[in-house]
Amino acid sequence: MNDDNAQSSECPFDATLIQVNLDAMAEFAAGVGHELNNPLAIISGYAQLMLREAEDPKQRQYLSTIVAQTRRAHEMIADIRLFARPPVPQWSRFDLKTVLEECTEHLNSWGRGRITFSVTEIPEQIEIESDRSQLITIILSLGRNALEAAPDDGSGLCVIRAGCVDDERVLIDVEDNGPGIPDEIRDKVFFPFYSGRQAGRGLGFGLPKAWKLLEGLGGTIHLVGGKSFASGCCWRISLSHKKTDTAESRQTAMGIEDSALKATELTDSHSDVADTNISDLS
Image 1 (cartoon, rainbow, N blue to C red):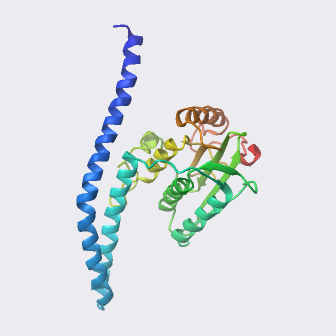
Image 2 (image 1 turned 45 degrees about the horizontal axis):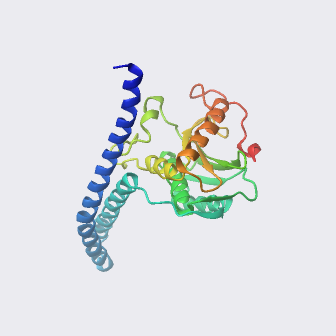
Image 3 (image 1 turned 135 degrees about the vertical axis):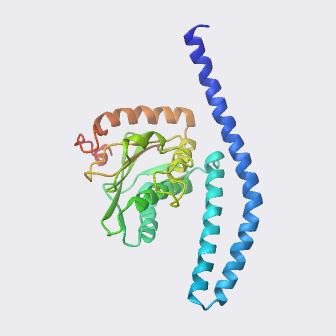
């Protein structure tokens, strides 16, 4: 068989195999979710009832741990189901800056002084057509990733920028001053269940969830060179201004990002990046 024919026949097979695996994961997650969520709800419910009446500090601590861990198990199941079978986007028009500012309010309340989130360099109004709820989930997932990597001394910073590339697309940067992502794990960060954190600190589902939701919105996400900090991560989202065919939209996004990456990608973890100001794109 001709090598070209062999390669062309492998691609659809690989895509089909990936989809089969995702479908199997979705069925598994749906079954597990149904079987586990009910007992988890019962355990959590009884623990909360006991917590209301408990007076002993140690007993209250144990019960609080039970409630927190059952909630964590429920969230893990929900994340698996979302990754395997993401919801259909509900398209609407909204102001991007308002949504990003709403996200920073939530993130700062979660950060509790460990890290400060801010919105900067965004034009007064960028109206886009997308799924508002899913975009919020994407930004919160990236922000939580920055929060979990932030030091405990309160020096953590994360800035969110956005700008229009043209009449079709908008770029959103989420950049933090954390430790960054080692080169050896960069090709794994979008794998579900993979986590660069130490054992016991979660499955690392934030980035895979953001990537999967963006795929449904016709967008893309890449790690690029930041401009605000000497170290850390800068995630660049490319998203359409309006509802478009997902496959066509993602190809356009990838083309725009390829040109942007040439100007912004780090040559090494400490190198300077070219002057590509996302606010100048608007």
